[in-house]
Image (cartoon, rainbow, N blue to C red; front, side, top):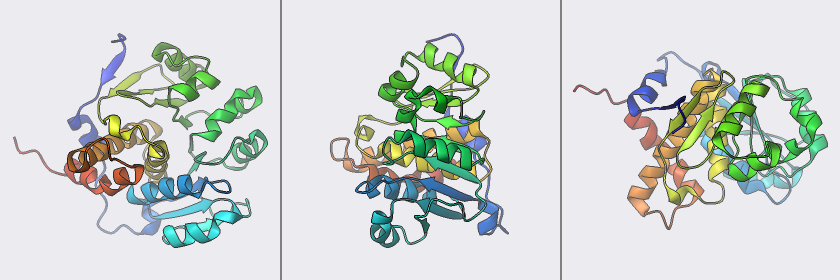
Length: 271
């Protein structure tokens, strides 16, 4: 293990999760925007949106391709759908990338249009091979690459190199894997040993993006949103494994067990 890697525990995560105020309303819990789902890729937007809603957020908007309108409005009726590309509301956080397609010009437009706390994933990360896009990323943005994506825009998926890149660009990087590592702008590295191989399935990363975006929109600082997001995602996956096994797991099963992951974190340990 690298000297400055800190492994986090259940107790650490439990202490980060804030109680929901009894007098809270939709506005209390934030309004997120997910920019996701090019034509024919509505599934990525659906998975990310459902996970975001399950994270405890107050309101969610989805900016997607017009061709996805019917399926999104049927599948995620709780969300507000936009297809025109113009900001309609003031958002608490923005997640960009799931199923979006690698369109550097469009990603650049999103980065320049939205100034809220931000999560970049999937095709938003793949577009970062264009150097001018890297300079457009604001400090404290959260990036969620798997090793292949990290190798493309960083040039390496070695943990030390990823941590150095995060520090250099003043961003948070969630390097997905088992274990998952969160690298911070300060040079710290956190390790979270949750999750299992059943989660290595299409759409799992979209689910994580939705969770982290939802937590960020609720006012969690980027570090806590990243750590809690990874933990809830991983523990939901572990509950899914215990119920249905690793071989048969789908990304939607992770969403289905998110309530279990949240519930176990609110149990008071009397020992």
